[in-house]
Structures are given as structure tokens and as C-alpha cells.
Image 1 (cartoon, rainbow, N blue to C red):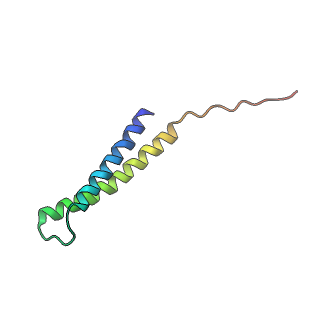
Image 2 (cartoon, rainbow, N blue to C red):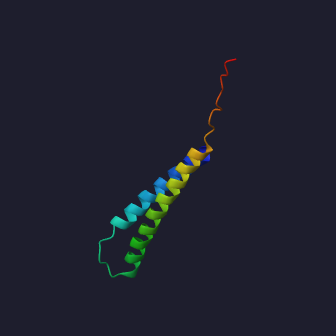
Image 3 (cartoon, one colour):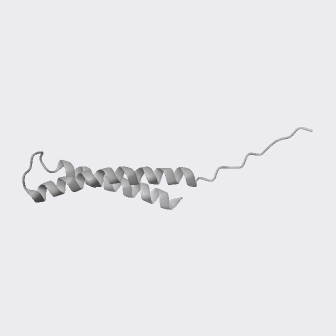
Amino acid sequence: MKMSVGIAITGIGMFVTGLIMFYSIELGQTDPVLRFIKNTGTFGGISGMGVFLAGILLYIIGKNEPQMKEHVDV
């Protein structure tokens, strides 16, 4: 269960890093290096969303549900 929380935190970090990379470069840049940074930010942000979702799903799936106790009246 701790691994899934770590994965979710990594996803948040990737998403924030992608946002910073994407919004730090102005729109319409013609310099190839700046365009590469902006495109890498887009890819990192979208990947971060996926990693975060995977961490949340692993956390939910990995939870141990308590077994139902049946009370039978005889």
C-alpha cells in the first residue's frame, strides 16, 4: 500500500514539473530548444496524470476489505 502512495506522489510531481515546463515558455516560439522544452512539459504533465491515476487505482485495489460476518438466527 505504501508503494501506491509513492506512485501517486511521483505522478503529482511529474504533473507539476510538466506544468512548469509548459507555461514557462511563451506560445509561438521558433527556437527548437524552447519548443522541445514546451513539448516535453506537455508529455510530462499528461504522463504525470496517468501515473497519479495508476497510484490511486493501485491504492484502491490493494485495500483489504473486511470480511462480512454473517449472523444466522437459528
